[in-house]
Length: 453
Image 1 (tube, rainbow, N blue to C red):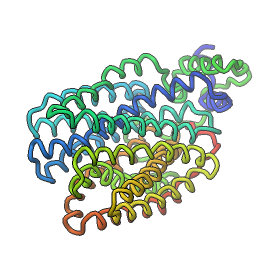
Image 2: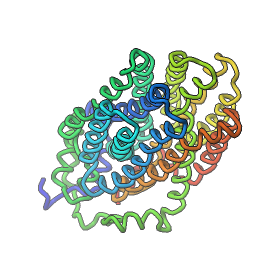
Image 3: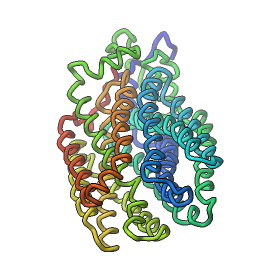
Image 4: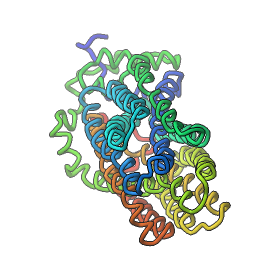
């Protein structure tokens, strides 16, 4: 087949959706998932590093809050720009570049001697992290067959729990071991820089994106490789139609993509999606970045508070497993809203817990429901938009959410001083409840083909 006689994006889409799950899908999922886990390890590590540096460098609460928030400033910019770049230059290339940026910046953080240099590097780390996450979910969603797409994206998100658990293990065993423990933790965080090379040359580009860019021969080659892995024959020649017969893309330039997010067709889902992202980011990062420090402030020593955090973190995996099953049974909106309501209830219990057992139980419930909600949110986000602006829509939704993740760590010390942990976690519960309501403004595309315009 030549570029003169291409399959359209629609016929490629039908062939991708008809495939069973193959080793090629597994390679895309695990290749992207490992990058996702490394992201989580970096984000998780900073919560443990903050608790250690607050003691070693005698930092004030607002100074430690800025270590977290400056990274989220970078993530807000990275998510917005990364999505635009991925729609222009491809999913795989931007995925690899973002891994490289944050891996190198994390490794360099191990060498800093003061707060100012650390803040600069955390901003660069945020640029990479922010760009990577929405691009990875968009990338995997464009390969996943429609009947299992939501489940595969939740499984992708479950790699976050693996990375966060790795961070908790490093926080428990490495950081307290010596005064230089936090430096060794950052050094381990440089692994993504090397992994970026595998991503760039070991994974295929999205066939849907290639077809939309007019690179039909490359798109056909990618789809054929998946069909061969499944032992399926390629689509017959009668499936090929002229490119001109395909629906035109919704947007083809940066300006038109940004404008399209607020066009009549997409404005409600964009507004609701941004609100969900904002509220979930505020509550999640406000809580989980600060849990080790809050436990220390409540009288638990550093090692014990890290141990509690490790146990709480392990509850993320069953949360993802439940969401992965329910998202194809209940659908996207119901699954997302139920897990958000569960997060709200768990947050109230965590804020009022007054014994070690209650802290662990409420923390595990918060971890279970909150991370299940994250899985559902990442599954639904790429489905809201057509191929020509899918990464842009996902990236800007994530960018809107990162604004909340900037505000949240800075708000925690103020809320703690105003009313203690109980007031803080009630505020988080309110944000979770607002997100649960906003989820019903999204479009539920369970089992439906992606929009390939």
